[in-house]
Amino acid sequence: MIRHKAQASKDLAKVEKIKAKVKSKKVGTNKFSEKDLIKDILREGKTIGASEKVVEKYAPKVAEKVRKWVEKRAEVTKDDVNRMVAKEIEKYNRDLAFIYKNRGKII
Amino acid sequence: MFIVLLAGLVHATLQLGIGTLLLLYHASLGKHIKRKTKSLVTNYIMGNGFLTAITAAATAFVIFTICQGEMSIAVLTVVVGILVALAISVWAFYYRWGRSTELWLPKSIAKFIDNRAKITESNTEAFSLGMLACFAEAPFTLMLVIITANSVLALPLALQILAIAFYTILSVLPLIIARIAIRKGQTIVDVQKWRIKNKKFLRIISGVGFLVLAIFLLAFKVLGVK
Image (cartoon, rainbow over all chains, first blue to last red; front, side):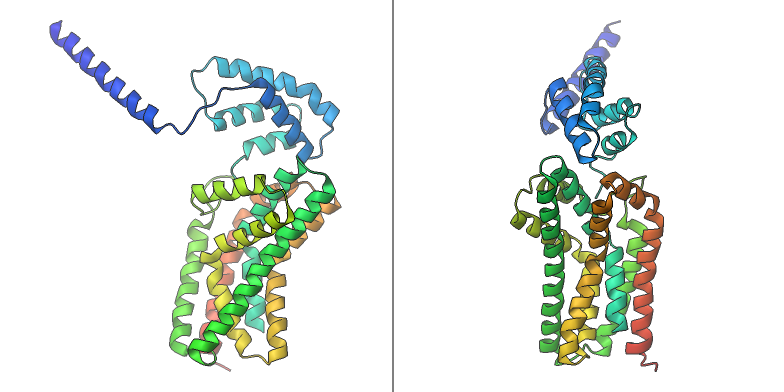
């Protein structure tokens, strides 16, 4: 029993060490913003020539779904958010989904 | 002149210039009116072409100064070897693996170019972005420029300028074609989908181009076959 407790505390100390290392390697974090995502979707819609009125209709729905998905997670990367946006937006506009899937993958 | 034509075509198959053009289009279409975007893209293509032409002319001058004419057979043999190595490099790691058109560039440089494309507001910045894209492709294009410069030295003076202009036009031809296509109604998504769909073909063509150039140089310049 005492050996198990000692082992558990050693493991905990290891995990704390790893967490500290991971924290120090972080480049930067931003809070997810639904408003910013809607603006981003509207801007991306403009680049592919999609009708602004049509994009305005589904952008808030997509942003809300992504916000709910993000809230269930402690941390997400930009790529995760882009993938989720692409998944949700594909029902409305395939070209827009393509842009989100291929962000940062042009060159 | 055939070497200049071939080198220009091989240069045209490389993808960094067109990738950066799409990034510029993407960043600009969301921010500026179409007229401004057209102007930025024109300046981007001019920047790309300008650096290519200047590099070719400067390289010709350097070769002429050092070698007092064209390069010797020994140097040409080394060039042939490097071209073969470039052909293998293009096949092996010019494109990163996966269903995208990500290139061999280190991520930090790709991100830097992406960020520069996003904050391009003026024609001068677009021009320098074009030069940056041309410069970043230098590991693959330098040999092509050297071969072109060497071939140009064998021509009469009036034809030398024409040959450099011809090479420059060929090298920026994909950018011009993409610009015309987008102007005619294609979107950047269409162009990017085309690039992804034909990635293997472009990779093969690039490698084969380098190889054909090497064989041509070996046969007609090094071994002196007539």
